[in-house]
Length: 79
Image (tube, rainbow, N blue to C red; front, top):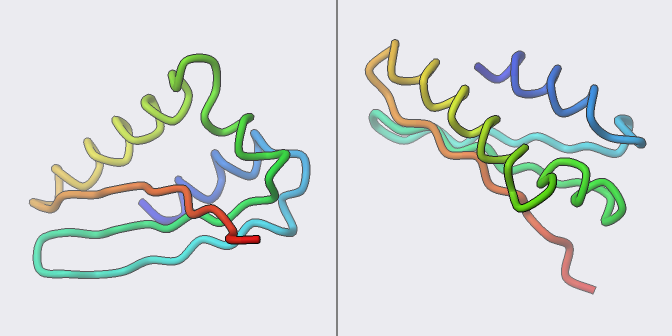
Protein backbone atom coordinates (compact mmCIF):
# COMPACT_ATOMS: atom_id res chain seq x y z
CA UNK A 1 0.00 0.00 0.00
CA UNK A 2 2.66 2.48 1.04
CA UNK A 3 4.79 1.89 -2.06
CA UNK A 4 1.74 2.26 -4.31
CA UNK A 5 0.68 5.49 -2.62
CA UNK A 6 4.16 6.96 -2.83
CA UNK A 7 4.49 6.02 -6.52
CA UNK A 8 1.14 7.56 -7.49
CA UNK A 9 1.70 10.80 -5.57
CA UNK A 10 5.22 11.25 -6.98
CA UNK A 11 3.79 11.02 -10.52
CA UNK A 12 1.26 13.78 -9.81
CA UNK A 13 3.39 16.42 -8.12
CA UNK A 14 5.96 18.90 -9.41
CA UNK A 15 8.41 18.61 -6.48
CA UNK A 16 8.55 14.89 -5.54
CA UNK A 17 11.78 15.33 -3.57
CA UNK A 18 9.93 17.48 -1.01
CA UNK A 19 7.16 14.94 -0.37
CA UNK A 20 7.10 13.35 3.08
CA UNK A 21 4.89 10.30 3.59
CA UNK A 22 4.46 9.12 7.17
CA UNK A 23 2.76 5.86 8.14
CA UNK A 24 1.00 5.50 11.50
CA UNK A 25 -0.07 1.99 12.43
CA UNK A 26 -2.91 1.19 14.81
CA UNK A 27 -4.78 -2.07 15.33
CA UNK A 28 -6.58 -2.82 12.04
CA UNK A 29 -6.02 0.76 10.80
CA UNK A 30 -3.23 2.47 8.90
CA UNK A 31 -3.05 6.26 8.58
CA UNK A 32 -0.86 7.92 5.98
CA UNK A 33 0.06 11.57 6.52
CA UNK A 34 1.14 13.28 3.32
CA UNK A 35 3.15 16.49 3.60
CA UNK A 36 3.61 18.42 0.33
CA UNK A 37 4.71 21.77 -0.96
CA UNK A 38 1.70 24.11 -1.01
CA UNK A 39 1.76 24.35 -4.81
CA UNK A 40 1.50 20.53 -5.09
CA UNK A 41 -1.48 20.16 -2.74
CA UNK A 42 -3.92 21.28 -5.44
CA UNK A 43 -2.51 18.75 -7.89
CA UNK A 44 -3.13 15.89 -5.46
CA UNK A 45 -6.60 17.05 -4.45
CA UNK A 46 -7.68 17.60 -8.06
CA UNK A 47 -10.79 19.27 -9.39
CA UNK A 48 -13.60 19.05 -6.85
CA UNK A 49 -11.50 16.55 -4.85
CA UNK A 50 -11.85 13.78 -7.42
CA UNK A 51 -8.15 12.85 -7.53
CA UNK A 52 -7.67 12.47 -3.77
CA UNK A 53 -11.00 10.62 -3.53
CA UNK A 54 -9.82 8.10 -6.15
CA UNK A 55 -6.48 7.65 -4.37
CA UNK A 56 -8.25 7.11 -1.03
CA UNK A 57 -10.61 4.57 -2.63
CA UNK A 58 -7.72 2.57 -4.10
CA UNK A 59 -5.69 2.59 -0.89
CA UNK A 60 -8.80 1.68 1.10
CA UNK A 61 -9.55 -1.24 -1.20
CA UNK A 62 -5.98 -2.51 -0.91
CA UNK A 63 -6.17 -2.28 2.88
CA UNK A 64 -9.51 -4.10 2.95
CA UNK A 65 -7.92 -7.07 1.20
CA UNK A 66 -5.67 -7.36 4.27
CA UNK A 67 -8.51 -6.87 6.76
CA UNK A 68 -7.51 -3.31 7.61
CA UNK A 69 -8.72 0.25 7.11
CA UNK A 70 -6.54 2.90 5.51
CA UNK A 71 -6.81 6.66 5.75
CA UNK A 72 -4.88 9.19 3.64
CA UNK A 73 -4.59 12.69 5.09
CA UNK A 74 -2.90 15.72 3.59
CA UNK A 75 -1.12 17.57 6.37
CA UNK A 76 -0.77 21.31 5.84
CA UNK A 77 2.20 23.25 7.13
CA UNK A 78 1.38 25.84 9.75
CA UNK A 79 3.04 29.13 8.76
